[in-house]
Image 1 (cartoon, chains in turn blue, orange):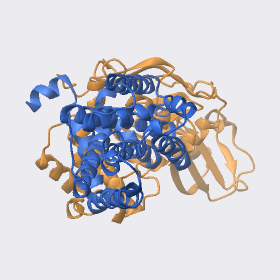
Image 2 (cartoon, one colour):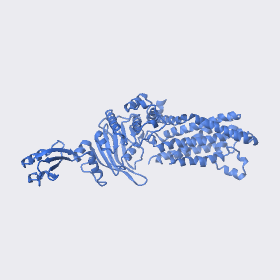
Image 3 (tube, helix red, strand yellow):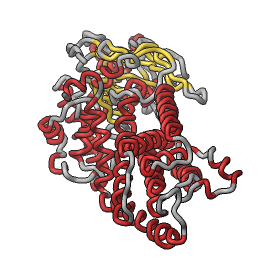
Image 4 (tube, chains in turn blue, green):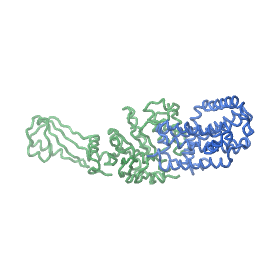
Length: 261
Length: 326
């Protein structure tokens, strides 16, 4: 099998990059698992138990259960971006990227290795959050396949976005500015912890311009069959974003932007 | 992916009118052409900013050429990059390593990256040959600078390349380790690897290279067999210390172009030796004897590669060197 694969692509290179990136996660295994478990627990204690007890059901779902897809999406987005951006930025920063750039690897193989590992880590953390939520609420997943599809598509597309960010960034400040100033606000204003029905009409319309709303809404639909926007619109939206990011990455390697002078 | 192994003596690397102009307009390489034969060691000399690293980086795929082409074993580095890069190993100038990786893991990673199936026996051979076997489980951040340099060589050799680029391999390395590096290069040549190294150290080029190229202002101003270069451009001098000072040279010695110095107590004869080893020393000595000039000591000297190099790079840009074979 591996021989067959190695004839059509540099399978060993993809595996080498993937394993190298996953090894970083293994080195900080405790931190990687404990952090999301602790964070999720805190969210449930603060939002679920303290505040949630004063909030009526949202769309026929208890508030604790309502915020689970939002929590998963928050983790997926932030981890996908930070894993992938750091994964490519740090070799650039330390100079070790010379080896990848001088190796017989195509754009696709580099992306499969780096983005594949970043997405894998984000998906694992998303599933840990899901499992942790199971300790606080009774989990109900109406469409598990659609849920997985959303999780995988989101992890892949935002890992690609993070990869682009890591190539673009030429200092650590730029590396953190997009997640901190763009992604986190979008997630919090994207209906992760509330339904847009609760907002005044003007803000409901403005919220529809937030792309993260579509992701949270789609994932929530896969759990409880309630959504702010049509689930197909969400799926198509995240797929289009994935294709755009792939195109940008291809252009980066084709032109050598910030990689090959 | 099938690669025909180049025979020793055949052209393994062909650089054809390669130019590189960076975005800011700086021309780092100006129409460089050079053929390198399989199995040879070539040293590229040049001052800082001459274009040595840009040349290597372009061949290895780190820098995009502005024009010209490079063939590795007959394959174009742009269209057949999978083949050409799998034949090349690069040891960069900077000590760039992943601090938290072990020696074994980082060398194994390099082998995989270059498309080779895991081969622990080969990795072990490479590590042993570079005296790294005892350090195989050490994290890279715990190694000395010299050991890190060896790790970079091990990484470059992990995928069994046929061409090895060593960019300033002994920069900042102590004398002992430098000699070790030279021994490693000799062993690699024995195994048929073609080696292209850049260096500031003339002594290094003189010690290990078969051919020497001199780069200055982005131009390859000279490429020559080391011995031929020494013979062609290296001045030889015969110095004679006389018993009695001379006020002037006798007319019979005029054809030899002798110089008087040290208040007439030293005679200097500058000469060239032909490829067959012939020169006019015996004629000079015979003429001295006939003129009744006696001397108490004599010795010959030859200009070093360093002196040749300094002479070449101090020439204005774009001035070709007489007799240079590029």
